[in-house]
Length: 407
Image 1 (spheres, helix red, strand yellow):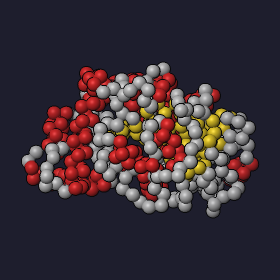
Image 2 (cartoon, helix red, strand yellow):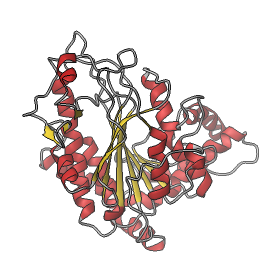
Image 3 (tube, helix red, strand yellow):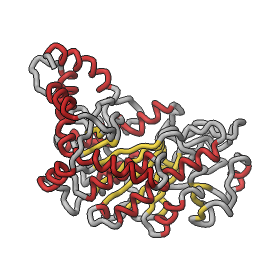
């Protein structure tokens, strides 16, 4: 690529970098992955964090269902689940009937459910609320994510955190370091690799922001060398999923790729995956149940796979959404943007059970659930007990300790 074109391309990339849209790509041989795993494998005792983002604002009330509360039945008569339908966890709460795999994790004491999770002064905007969750800064907008700040504080290896998908979420972007983005689509690699190599070359005349973008392309090349076999695995796994009738479960495919990485001890500590579609303003019941089934099937298969692997047993999964929904149903048999909701934590090191107080369905904040657990306390525990890191750079000081991970 001629030098002038390179500089123009980097300038054009600056806006994409600011938006978190730093693209990575995969290449395709198992030999390269095995070599990378042999050269610097993740230590056997190291724990791995998998972050699942449920985009759209999942209705927590119909996920962790207060089936015994009359206020639940009064507020949404067309959306309720009866006590005979829910997967009962105790005499008051049950899981959505789609979450059979998570119920099994609960029975095995490997599912922690943190209740009433949110942040002070909730915002009903998808974009602002997701920005708050991913940057861990409820009061002031900041340009870095909580995982990005962990990356900044702990080194420069670009594959310590990996997003499965070509667009980095804000949580993965630091001031100096960004996670790798693994695009799982098939690519023609020779021309692509040459272009990215050119874009990643140092240049003393680059501006600070252009240098940041240039570094991301350099990091992409490092990530590609490590993840070259994952694309081959992804293609194989996608074919398997199709044969099993799971063609539409993209979350399952993402987690299968993550699982293959973990089992061969790729030196990655944090993976990020996602599932969209939870903005259920109309006809919620069937839509949400279908999405929760997709989520449950993917996560349950992943957890079962990890439990059977000596390295996978150290994996912890966190699933969250940017906000819950309002308690009362709307006129379209759906629910509108709300506030607090449950967060699910599962995996071998997890101490199962309920954490945090269940929000009242009658003592509301203008129709919304009141937050009982600050999401930053969850992040703090994950930093301390999964990543083995000081949580201060990621979430600040003074955070509470919930204790859902074994030490």
